[in-house]
Amino acid sequence: MPDQEFETFHIDDAELRIPAASLNDRLRGRLRDGGYEHYECDHIRAYLRPGDRVLDLGSGAGLVAIVAARIVGPENVTTVEPNPEMHQALRRNLRQNAGTELRLIKGAVVGDGYAEKTVTLNLRSAFWSASVGGPPGKNPRLVEVPAKKLSRLIAARDATVLSMDIEGTEADLLAKPLPSQIRLVLIEMHPGLYGEPVRDALIANLEGQGFRNLGARRTEEVYAFGRGA
Image (cartoon, rainbow, N blue to C red; front, side, top):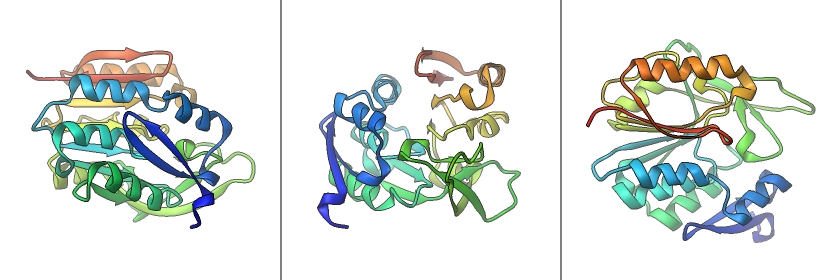
């Protein structure tokens, strides 16, 4: 694609190059003022530690994965992104800012009960709103993307940390216990999509598995949960 079809932003010493067609005014403003994934990156810096292996679900432009790679090394970070319109820019952002060892998996994460090989992704006006399920809205753009089961991703990458910004799919994934090897979960909840009672039930479920609420930004619905020493 020609350069004029991309816009470049600088956050946390990272250079993010993003397709102009995948931006709207609100997202563009958050990228310009440094507010994009600000709390998620704060949690990464506060709670990630050397030796962790990170599985970043819903990478978007790649900022969380890049910040994580600086702490644990790019070889210990795997990012999963469903939006095919972001893959070229995301791969470039990861390589430019974190090196070639950071792995990108193309597809949408699903629960173990999902039986199909693909899942329908709803592409919206800005890349941070692409979602599996939910109302299609006006002029929907629906694409089929590979379905990636969470348990297989965790096992294949031997993950100890989950970072999740998956636009509501967490309501399904977090309803079931996570493997004991997961010690840290960093997540943006989306109660606007499934309601506050569901969000509260997800939090209670994590706490029932021994996770402790390490920090929450309720205005942004960004949480960190940790368990073990």
